[in-house]
Length: 177
Image (cartoon, rainbow, N blue to C red):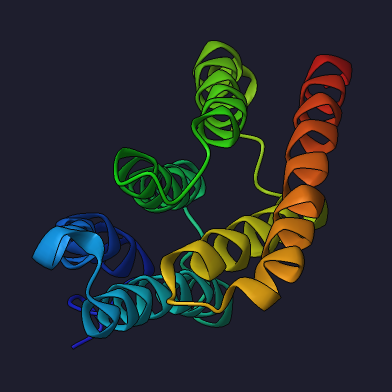
């Protein structure tokens, strides 16, 4: 059983299941509140799997260089697929998608460039950033009354600030190493 539920297997499953979330976002033109909740639920459970694989990796001493690299890639694929899908539907601002994806792709390329010095694992700031991004995008995914848009938009503003700040911090720490 351990082989099938390894942290890296859970991470790979998260990546492979993303298309089901995208399908749910677009189902019935993206305007069906039932499918919006289904899409949110899929993304929520895929996000929870991120916590599970990290916990399992540490608890069973299965932390690996592959896992340290794949986990953030899965996170970026998850958030990126949601933002791009919602932007295509006109439910999420393209400029936010561009800012966040530029940071995420830029950091991924940077990680590849410095990988010979060792993989730099996600830190606390990156985890907080990912949480705000996930919940922020989730609020755009859900059918929400316009009276709550201020909350959704404010939450996303914090996510954007954390995205930029943690990106600069990541580069600074990597260059020190």
